[in-house]
Amino acid sequence: MSSEAWFTVLVLAVGLERVAELAVSQRNAAWSLARGGVESGRGHYPFMVVLHTGLLVGALAEVWLRRPDVVPLLAWSMLALVLLAQGLRWWCIATLGRQWNTRVIVVPGAARVTGGPYRWIPHPNYVAVVVEGLALPLVHSAWITAVVFTALNGLLLATRVRAEDAALTRLA
Image: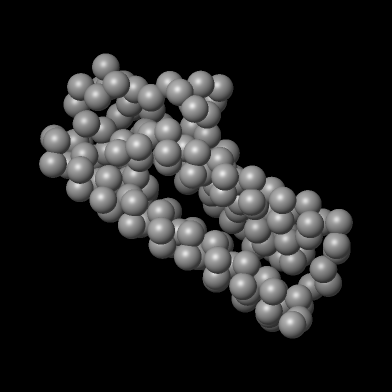
């Protein structure tokens, strides 16, 4: 199988992981809203969906159209970072439990989670997103996608973190 085909399998696996995330997110959002949860930051959410979809589509398009050479040391180190980012993301999801979703929904009176990775950094899930967004395309030297996603994601996260921090001030 060609390196492009293997990369496609990897990107599809990440895409399936995202579908699993969305299923968990929808279940948790319904749980939060049923308990009086208040959603913040709706305006940036559609851009976030487009950007994250664009990461996967852009990486595949760049690899299949530009056909960059695979640099083995870069590929293996970036694959390790992608896997570590997935582990961190699911650690965040497990730690937040029902409070985790892809939207910013806060249930009034809920306690702020300070365990797991939140013990050390305030937004560890975004660390996973940043690492994955840079590393996934670089597994196959798709540097254009890595740079464009990282720049746009930086702008998005500046807005997202402000919205989330403001919403979290409502927690006990």
